[in-house]
Length: 96
Image (cartoon, rainbow, N blue to C red; front, side, top):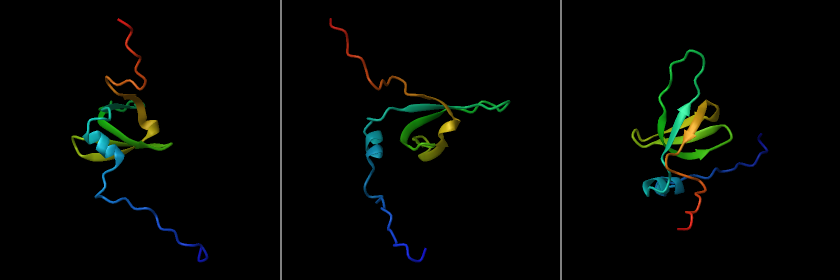
């Protein structure tokens, strides 16, 4: 690998809030509830409540406001994602 050109990776400045963090602070992102898969006789795990910050093909980055933590959760561990009161494509109100 001695002949490989070095590449610098982009850095994210902590002084510049991300789009997602700005939207969460402004109340524009829907609060989400995650319910997890249960396997065998394992006790039920408690659902997590917070905000989906980002996803990849295998992982979800989930921000829990109460703890101030971001959790990286494997997509396969999630049974259900609920966004109470939020509709991705709301239907227009019927004419009065």
